[in-house]
Image 1 (cartoon, rainbow, N blue to C red):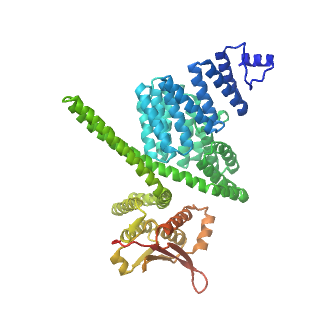
Image 2: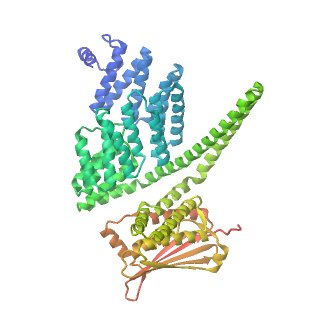
Length: 637
């Protein structure tokens, strides 16, 4: 770079303006401007760095050097995309590269252009388009036999599946990386393979297992950053195992925190800072945890990662609360609340994309099976006549085109009818099958097994598996028969009664007319209020809990009345605040209210919920009554 700087300073020339550089060849000037741009990025002078990169790209167009033109094009596009977030300008560069690489029949350049386009589309929540471009790149990479690009295509697909919360598909793609590790730079690719596999698990033991395999390559074979990623994952696994001191020792003994820098290529810096924040929170170092949370938040905001921003702010608010700084804690929670709608929109996009991707992949597998079968028939037919083969090939193309066209039409109709409903169904399922409920249920099952109560354990496991199957099946539709809903509730209550050691008992009262007609009602509406009664009403009750559930006919609607003799809402709220309790049940109630508002718009009768506090003559709390009115559909309609 000294040659370019020396010449510029000697001639007193503003390098940001157009001009020639007679003491340098065009190729030398291009390389020098690229180096200048890199230095300015390190100095965080993005404004001048943009000028330097654009100057290098302009000179490469003028010089007509293919290698430099492609290099400067990708360099400029990556800078515009990651450092300046100028998506429109980045897209223009990608389109230019597509045309130029196609014209020059440069397949490697085309594959990389597909990769860059998919990353831009992923940031714009165009997940299906991003997947299509990755698959185009993967097909082309396989045709030219480039193992490095094939590896990257599987990595990008896995990362995309992680983004839309399709953990199983992400796992499948990352596991494919094992079989396509390139010979060149094998240790680097092997380390990154197992780091990616570990990131597709929520289970701490699995995260630890695959991260430790990646760590084995850190004895001089892999770069420091890859090893830092592995050690960060190991530390996170120990955090999940509630071993914060062990997690901190892993980081302190293996990662030089001061040398870790932010990079657009991975989320190491923000992730490591967040991990340290949680570790120090668990160790009681609340002030220190806030420092790390702030460092993580700075880059979450820079990357516009809404989910990480919300999670980091919620974690930080808990640290402020522990320090007694309730003003700061409340302010952070208010900021999280403001991001709720944006988060819900992103989650909806991801849920819809996940459903679409599943349909596309299922359709593709079906098409592959059909094509394989047809190919066998074509092979047989070829031996008889070429004309027959030509007609058969044309027929297959027409059939495939029709299937794809109809599939496209069906997807469009699916979007229009299900976009809003998809989010509500997703929230309802998550609220019922939440980790706390499953964890407590499995703990009860484990307790039976440890006490060698085999019969009780078997009955409890059968009941739990039946409940999970019923809940998953009920999410396929927004309606369920009354008899199926009652069976689901009874199954849920049997599980909770065992878990709470028979601390409460319930009674069902159902009008005969309802039993006879067995109408269709909205699913997964009643259970959250029963769960509220058990968790909030009976947890701190000094007597046996009594839960009454009544179903009554009400013209074109049905009324469900849930009555408990618990401690009441005010007392439950006090216990919740004192114990820093989870807000899962309030979220479940809010999700249920959202579904009721949707039902209000699609049903003829209105759906509603009324909650009453019951008091005895001495004005003490005597429990809670919840009255739920739901529209019904008769089976013969």
